[in-house]
Length: 480
Ligand code: NDP
Image 1 (cartoon, rainbow, N blue to C red):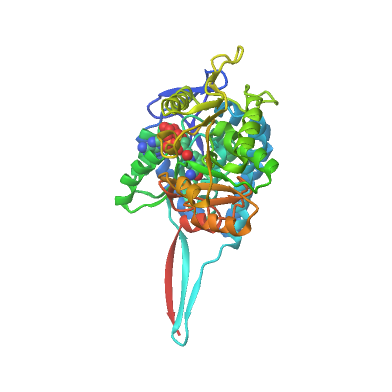
Image 2: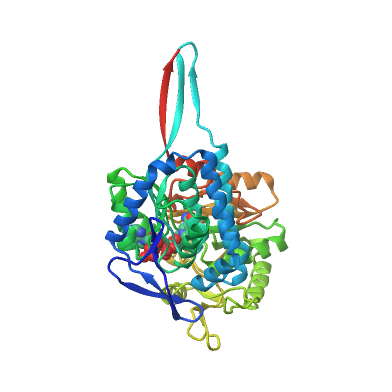
């Protein structure tokens, strides 16, 4: 059985306390590797190494740092099969998803910032006849990156790449539920002979290893993606220490479907936006609002298609849904289905655990679930479930659907299906979300600002936003 190690100062090291915990394969419900149970003393070592590496890393030319980022992307690509296999095994997602989405995107993240950094310029503001201000953008120093389990390497690299490209040294913690591709990334660092101490990866639980990264006086910024409750805990610690904070948190995204949409395209995209990655994408549209004119047709065709979708073990190339990430998460999702029934919902499809044959009989599988008949403001429609569960609700007018769509504490993303140009713009303007797709879902341009409003977070990732986050502006005035 593989024993995962931390990667500190360019070396694979065991946690100082010598303790490990189990890494469970969601497809089978069995243990397949061991994860370091790192504590503050391990984080201390990592931060020390990062701090010592900072002056030489931040002193490199932008081209040199860009070259290193490119080597990361090539290094992941060279181990593509290994990464794909590991991501699917660790998370339970269908292997084709890891192959077409997760790992290619991690490669793109490094590639994007490898070149992005070379086009990043700071401003100058001339005061006519008086002088000129110019803004320097300096790296912050040591920064902490903490990521969740749903898109493990995809989101981990989305933070690490801009942090490193802008000249910071990093101490990063992947989710304890899905540590494996972060571990493989350390092997890439060995492959490419990456400078020691610049990127340190510490495994362990959030309340111990994660907390130590957040609390440490040397970490100047925390880039966090995860649940809203954890985001609040982190903010409470980091805000009084005046750390920069980027918090990408939960969502309860509306998918708003008007009568005049292109039905077939809407339906096939809605199937993905509801159940891709077993519904465990922060951008999934879990509240589907359908205008009355096409509600019955939508319901019939959506339900029929979902009832035929294949839930299977991740290595099955025919699997449309794999396992959810853990037993506790499966139980949480199933408890929300019970809650929906208590709240008066009717289960139109799914609503139960799926039992596969051995050796997958102890795996964590849930049938894709469609629920109808719930009030828009009930708990099922307000709280993040983060699994293969959607609700469908009819509406008549724009005003009505806007009220329902904006009723949650969250404001991450929204999807709108209509061919009425004016309505599309009106809705996009009025909806409370950081990201709006019109007649599309999950189309991502890495240059665009990414993040949410309300309880979905603070700050934006992506493009210049990420590079601004990981740098400190310094204004210099020179008199003429
Ligand atoms: P969690 O908030 O539970 O965990 C996220 C990360 O934070 C993990 O690495 C976790 O460690 C760590 N952590 C937990 N507690 C602390 C703490 N006190 N101090 C420091 N670190 C801590 O989220 P999940 O992993 O369950 O991910 C699912 C959530 O992520 C959903 O709410 C989803 O919406 C959100 N998400 C948001 C996205 C966005 O871009 N807005 C994108 C993807 C997901 P541990 O390993 O112990 O859990």
